[in-house]
Amino acid sequence: MVWVRSPVYFYKRGEMFYFSRAVPSDLQHRFDKRKVEVSLRTKSVSRARKSAAALSDRLERYWDSLRMELIYSRELGLSVIEEGTARQASKLTFDEVLELYHRLKGVGKTKLFFEGSERSIRYLKDCLGHNSVDGLMPGDAGLFRDYLLERGMSASSVKRVIASVRAILNLVIKERGLSRPNIFNGVFIPKDLDKRSRPPIPSGEIQKIQNECRSADDEPRWLIALISDTGVRLAEACGLLCSDIKLTDAVPHLVIREHPWRRLKTSSSNRDVLNLISDFRVISRC
Image 1 (cartoon, rainbow, N blue to C red):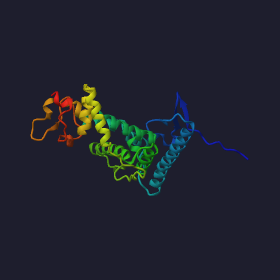
Image 2 (image 1 turned 90 degrees about the vertical axis):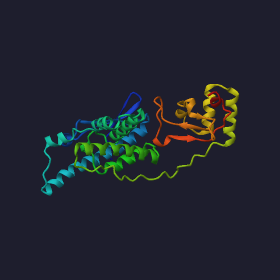
Image 3 (image 1 turned 120 degrees about the vertical axis):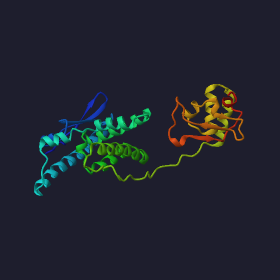
Image 4 (image 1 turned 135 degrees about the vertical axis):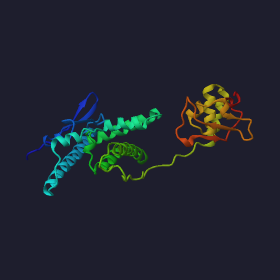
């Protein structure tokens, strides 16, 4: 019996494993680098082997689709893009698209906006193994969805990442006048079958926390007491002015508004919070 050893496309650098595979010579003109090299984000040999095999399989299918595209074009008598033209088209990278998105859409946005979009594009590059917008294929949207789910993301997180990538590509398609559809439009994302609703904190536990806050009677506990009583976010509570606390009105309430030192998460976060207990120290001190 002759044993045929399967090729290994991963190696260890430090404590992490990395995937590495050379781009076939007949397709190198389509890309901006000669080798696909991405982190597998694992320290486990077995997980690295499985991830590398899956990524290699995706690359094989992707490369085969590029070869079939050339064959079909010749059989149908269509004009085939010359090598120089293909190289020019593939120069638009995901990194450049992201930079354009940040420059046009990032004005006045928080750090969270930039970190989220950068993370989404990093996931896309890690999944596809290249950095070329021209290299996107129709089936890549489904591969990206599966990649995110395999990472253990929930359906809502996958939707958020794909929505970010979709918005970035929509912008560059319009700005650069690209005659290509956005493959991330209408991607089906299955629901989480094991998703569980988060139960509320029992009222007895909230009362216990509030009693401890009264007993300790210091600034951190004033803040905890206020949050436990009103349900406002931590940043919202920290950014309050004394003038935002309305205890003398007919209905005592908090006014949650944006301030120069603290932005709100969404526009709907502007609101009045009515459920107050006026004997909390953080309120009475004002």
